[in-house]
Length: 347
Image (cartoon, rainbow, N blue to C red; front, side):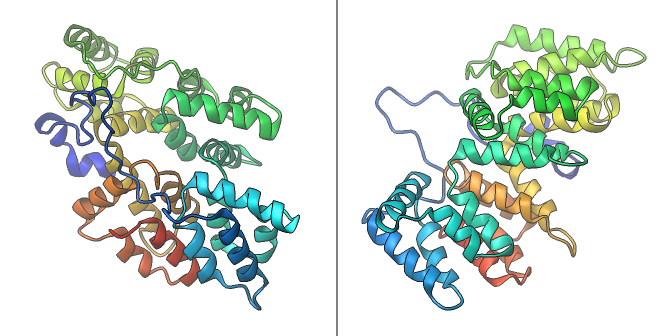
């Protein structure tokens, strides 16, 4: 709950940080880009494939050369490099890298060669594989992706693992938590940037009546509203709730719900109000203390590098008075650290 313990007042005092309330870009205009990776203007797939082959065949493997190439190419360019490598050498680049590299560095490299839908599908599968479930990964991915992104990774999941994502979720979760995840899986959540004041008042009242106003909680109301309304509309609901409840909506959610369903719905609240700050908090918690959650670090820096990583890095510095790069530097895993820093760009 660190995010809202630090910034609870922002629910009532600030506007959302990622400009969802702003007008949509005019027709023909180019929307701003907040990724840290941009296309290499002098790109040559064959040249990069040859350089990778040389780096792999060097005694001991030249990880620095590998990093310099793949961390500075877009995902689309990496797909071209894969095809060129197979064409020129007759070998599968991903399999070759998997054999040549090791540890967390290998995980980052392999992640970078998956397309976004494949990578999300892979991470969801890993979160449900074997004994136990990594609920925070399920919440992060299903709670922050667009409807189109959800549809794409559902298709990728079926192609890679031979079963529907919903079927896997049903086998690994239960109760209200399962209901919330399956609602997000439908990929029918509103994405309208325009906000409906009347609906916000109605929803805020419904949430108040289902929680704070009564003894016990009608969890279905919380799930239905939070998994169906757009992020912009949720922000309007939070504002309206301030007029009804005795405390901010995040605190109410924390008190009314428990466990996995609370964490899932809180992800939606945090992402609606300030998605870059949500990811900044996730990065901070992954590096906090003596241990490091390498999977979370890798997933966020890879998956957001062509989406909003610039904003995430800015929020991280604002929230923790340090840069991500500074915190990565103390982890002491040279090649792994260098490739993650490279994904952060020149910021």
